[in-house]
Amino acid sequence: MSNGTETTKTAANQVVTDELRRWIVEQAEAGCRPDDVLKAMQTAGWDEEVALDAMEETLRARLDELGPRKSRAAALPPAVPVPNPDHDEKSSPVIEVEGHAVRVLMTMAEPRVMVFGGLLSEAECDAMMALAGPRLLRSETVDNATGGSEVNAARTSDGMFFERGETPLIDKIERRLAALVRWPLVNGEGLQVLRYRPGAEYKPHHDYFDPVHPGTARVLERGGQRVGTVVMYLNTPEGGGATTFPEAGLAVAPVKGNAVFFSYDKAHASTKTLHGGAPVTAGEKWVATKWMREREFR
Image 1 (cartoon, rainbow, N blue to C red):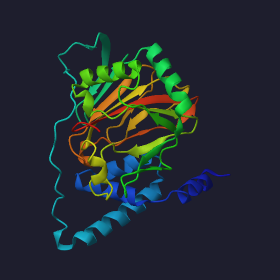
Image 2 (image 1 turned 180 degrees about the vertical axis):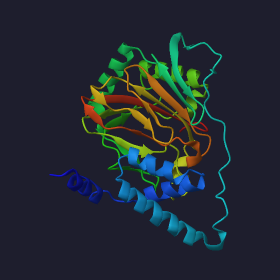
Image 3 (image 1 turned 180 degrees about the horizontal axis):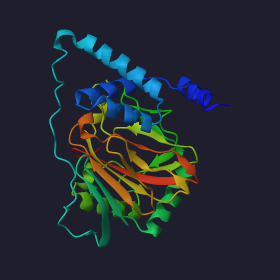
Image 4 (image 1 turned 120 degrees about the horizontal axis):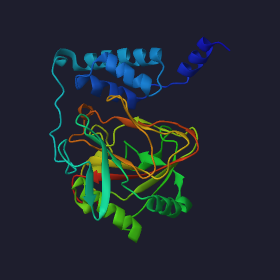
């Protein structure tokens, strides 16, 4: 079979969703260049021709919708305080938190991303996987229409949630995270553990709750917006599984015990925190994720 035939087959299977159209509009109204938007879509696996058609159709429809107001810039939501580790370029490469030494491996200002080494010990990683394993089910995402949850084709993993402070191990890790990012412990959601098998992935998305969705108001009642994320790697997969930030050209390799932190001060694409979990090509990938809210999470 020729390469051309394979490409055509892939493109034919790609469906342009309302979520993708909203994302394209967000990028345009945040001032992103069309070439950068196209590159981000291709990095996420979109066929170039499909991506170009989607951009043209979506942006033309948006201009028609705005009519005489098309030159008006979309208003950005106000910025809010976010988690912020006590570290800058002049600081020591090691942060001591709760009696545990965490190495700062990388920092980025825009988007605000930090990569930590040794956030979890090998024993802590193994123990969390053992606790989570028997409770894993097909992962769900927030249903944008109702604020509930649903299985989503974009997220092909198995997962479970721990209650905040559910076990001594979970409590210790949560306290370490709260101290590291300097954010109230009670503002954190329960830790979520995910297992990705070969071929599993999580397509690029934002962690904040999009205000345009009808179900967002219900979700925000539990503690306001999400403002920060920590993804901890519980094992090192044999291949693939990087955490990618398409707009920043960044890919964080999943290494056991390490973690990536990023924050977003507004529910808008201008934060450049679009990210995803690249497909696992060999073995399994286990991660534990902590989301931080504006206020106490109930």
